[in-house]
Amino acid sequence: MAAEPRINSQRTNKLMSTILSTTNRTLSRQWYERAQASLVEGVNSPSRGSAVYQDGPVVLERGGGSHVWDIDGNKYVDFMMSFGALIQGHAHPRIVDVVTHAVANGSHFAAATPAEEVAARRFCSMVPTAEAVRFCNSGSEATMLALRLARAHTGRNKFLKFEGHYHGWYDPYCLNGNSRPADQLGPPDRPAKIPDSAGIPASTFDDVVLAPWNNVVALESILREHGRDLAAIITEPIMANMGCILPRDGYLQKVCDLAHDYGALFIMDEVVTGFRYAPGGCQEYYGLKPDLSTFGKALGAGFPIGAVAGPRAILDRLKWAEGMVLHYGTFNGHRLTMEVVAANLELLSVAGTHQQLYAMGDAAIAALRDVFRRHQLPAIVQGFGPMFQIYFTSLDAIHDYRDYCGAVDTARYSRFVHALLDRGIYMTPSNGLHWIISTAHTEADVSALIIAADAACSAIA
Ligand SMILES: Cc1ncc(COP(=O)(O)O)c(C=O)c1O
Image (cartoon, rainbow, N blue to C red; front, side, top):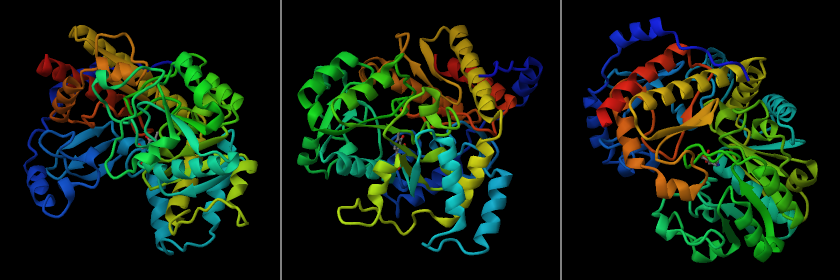
């Protein structure tokens, strides 16, 4: 990818004198008090509330480009970007234009539309293994459907998921998705199953085989026992829900080969990585051929979306027929979203777009590493290009869930991000998520981050 842009030190110095404090969040706090009267914890997902924000959420009311504004009028550079959904930043003029025109002619018909054909055609031309695609409304719906397809295709019920991977909140996926004390995890070749949620029958997890990630020896041992029963092995190509954990060289291809050796499908969950690491996602970046892949987030540029892609031989099981795989949904292929997807994919196909994401991300990563080095803090910045995470740890790299659970100081990370929130940088304090670069981010945004990070390091030292 392109060379890193250099951070303009003159501009950085100028910004240094203009950086604003964003600590006055009186209205956010008042809003949060009120919201708790009618919303559970004042929010609609625990990742937005007091589980991660120590004084309650920063309440946002406006976004433009790479920035968001809270209800107190504070302006932040946004590096969370709607958990990665906003690959074009906030209110991209093309997306605003498309939605404005489309909504004036009706929001949704729950019927066939020209837009969904355009969106699907562009999708299939970008994603290497997509002979066909089925759109739904979220990443969770996509992974749910992928598992149903895999079970129908193979005639098997069990599937294998990896520790620390998140595939949405469908019952059987809710296993070992949250950080736990390292002494609860069990041996790597027989990991302890730890449900993430109440309300799921224990028997649901009888069909789930659990394995540590990035560990071929443990996987081979587990497959010797369970491989012939598996409908699928599902994996995130880059672990994005324990921060940003990269696959070891050749690991994903090995998982794919092992799945096939045992007659199971290889499902790549590209809900986070799709359209981000390359126009065709991680399957393009790493040169892999998953049997099914799932998408969401960046595909919809801020609109609710999910998608399952694969060969006709599997996707055609959705056709209306005896023994079909059922997939209904009033909002599937939502008209406005389809217009947005079609426009977004066109934007993402413009030559140089991903190079720009990489250049900006790699510059931020390099500059952050330099900040931590100067402050002599035991922190690493892991990832590359459009997505990365900071870990306060004495390790050189985090390779899996076990490293994350045992060796990452998530409390210190939370303090660091709260210090950034007070200095005009918007990011979730949850170490399990990751920093996102959008096409709207500029060199000035990276400079603002580095200045704020410098001050935040002093604040938490
Ligand atoms: C890898 C992965 N898969 C699936 C999902 C679920 O997507 P959604 O939140 O759109 O339901 C997520 C959400 O963060 C995810 O990170």
